Length: 585
Image (cartoon, rainbow, N blue to C red; front, side, top):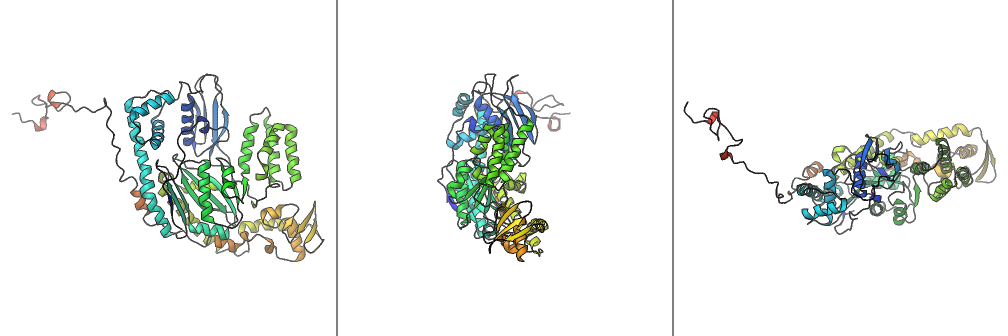
């Protein structure tokens, strides 16, 4: 498949409001560095200064610099995600700041460079005097001319770096991918303001997903540790042994609804499957709208762990004790996990008995997208989208600043995973993958205690502590587990044993060892000259031609007038030293 280059795409501009920088409790950041940068931009635009109470690798606490002002923000690494999440935000100021006034945190060089860089994207001929004037009007900061000039020079260099890679290295790299891995899909989109996007899906991944994996796709952003200029979006599935299976990834300028739509459009073209896909995502940044827009006939499940975190944040606004809040969270989790609609509504009613507002929040969160009882798609017992975040360990920090090196790091890890799993599966002798065999054996041990009554050719009644009805023709049980997981539940196993049939004939094909081996049957091949391509990055970047600002020219010293030139200790003259002195001894 050919590379698709779009030189005339329109990417989002740089004009943003403070409320879109810091959105509130639950907002995610790749790392503490990313949070600090966003917080600084937010404070500059809102017009207030803050100080750090805590600033560590896993948590940050800041408060307004004015004594007794209640504004406070606390963020920490999530227990289930590799991202920094805002847990507490009291967004009210009683100090008179925060309304775009004259108080701001001290401007840093990095902040100034980022501001100028955004402006230069829109107006490449932006003059230093114009920048000086605009920064003063927009942020109330009076900078020196030389400060802005130096910031502009650094911003131009960074933009030229991006321009060099986007327009010189990436097109060559894309061609190399397609030459070395035929059948892959690579899309490079560039714009006039030096922004670019690149989408990559290797043939081995596309083949493995189509023929060896369940039609289940996780969508999320891969957290980067140092690079704050780009966002890495990813789509992944799971193999028959529940191992994460990468499908595609893309580097974009920002995680926005528009960039997700673009990514999903490339993904739809790449996979080209006739199967109905179930997506799982955190529904943030417009994914709740983007998925049904691009994949009209798909199912979209919201990440349960993310939903629970949002619910906890909502409860923190209320007057309840921690014990009461924990009880409502537990009811939400049970409501999400039950396979019966009656029990789902019963759990919500329990929450309603404590708080009508909390119950209303649950029902307004679209439970048809996350409740096992109400969701119509096939999630195979997967309720979280955090699987994609494991890719964050695949990219070394020293490779984050180059898109070429980031993509090649992902390629190397995919190659390694395919080879490792291919060799492991060659030794398997069971019909199902190891993890599925284990789950099946646990159910087998319980099935012997159940009684079975045959009602018709395919319908059976299974009696134990409860009574359940099994239909072997449609692979359904009234307990709900068989049709949701893809593996026979304990009631189905009791019926299958009663009939003297093989349990494996009633398991999803995706759990069979044959399907697993098909998923890893294709290879990802090396890309020639990657190091040569990346080593040329920035080598031919011209230095921006800017006149040195008046008043900061280095003055040449006039050594003929004395001063701090060379002095001779022998003849006491100037302009030479003792070793070169020609005076007579």
